[in-house]
Length: 635
View (tube, helix red, strand yellow):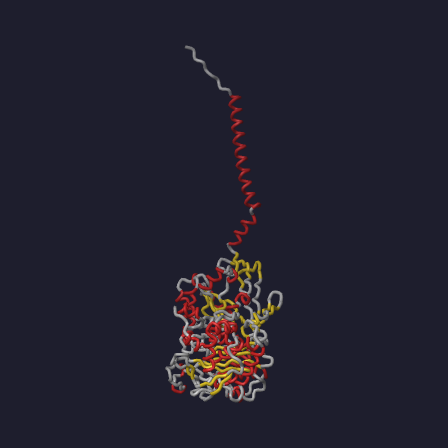
């Protein structure tokens, strides 16, 4: 069988080879084009993006804390300011053995036991990556000594920080307040208000008083620096800087010299005083005694001082003027007298024969007058001059609790005044509805009788009492009390004045107001319960003394001050305004356990009015400010 042999076709094979070679070359070329495109995209199109990522490895952004706004009194005296000082700080997350580091550090810079305690407390309240101060206010010598040994202490550095200072110390401490370290509760509040970013780098914020209530104005706006750092985190250069904006400065309505006069007038007594300009609502003095030194809180108060303040029987941290609740006593009577005239339950000439007590019809219970045997014949004028309880027992019974509640409530009693610091108590002006809601009991006629002389369920703060007196002085115009008078904008220098329009004006009969005012003027003259305080006054002022019980008395039991424990004695009160023809100051004074208002509270008011109206404080008047043991007229 014959086999056919196929010969190879070299030209065709060569053609196929060349085709495959061309396809492979095109494929390789496409791969190179694709690779080139990727390189172009990364190196050219995305250059800025990847350059930023690379730079971020050695660029850090640090916040710049703004200067906190300053606080001044109405005459430009500084009440709170800032100063710069060096602090020695540790970042716990960068330290392996913290205790050993602190021990070694103490061989270079003195670190006291209280510094260690405060640092431990800060660690408990902070995150480990935060820089925490272990020593503040370093001297230049200490700074230089640490700089020479810095290489030995990784995670430790010296920083320049701003510190708050209160040059007046205890004076007006409850008004100005203080700043303290930001805690977890503060952080939650800042986050809720979407303001957390503005506090990056900030360690402190306002805690009470003006520092707290005007935190937004005082804090300012945080800036930042973009810095290049080396591998160890040290700054090489500053790339860019956005400066912070300082907080706004505040001018208060407080006259700090008047405040100082008022606080010194109390001596060692506990109590409160609020003085208001009736024509504007400016708070001229705002006293709560005893006070405290706000400088103790700036670096974080140590446990020893905290225990002294927090556990003191005198409660220096309690703002008595703002939150202290006391029966108004006989200082309530001018509003009762005006209610009787306005609601036509009494006339100025209408009087009673006072036997020294009052009894409800069909009852044998006697509501006693402070003066055994009574005051004889008493009309409206005399009822205020001698502070006759019996007159107001009967008036309260005739008015009824609803009329008392509705009328006296117009003077701001039993409700917050709306003053521009936080924490104000609302007080209590009782009503039938309140008693049913609070005690699930109906209102009894006997309840009304006690309210008529400012006792019973009646409770007020010294601030509310001053506000009510200011409304009376301004013939019905109610200006909201305020402590901040001006806000100075740090950006543009503009000054914003606090608006002083009245909240409302009561429609009171001028004739009735004149009857009440004339009686209050007579209170400060011979025969009146504040005659001692009104003696030789160079101006005419109207006032009313008051005494409020601290402990109850049994029926028929006589109150003898010398036999009662000091802290169980009656509180002394006094309200006043002056000069009566054009009032420039209205005030309320309370002296805790001070006894008679005319003997203890009224002299304090006289010193304050003398300074405010006459511009001077007689030395002999200061010596008589609060006599320790002096018998005087009740209320």
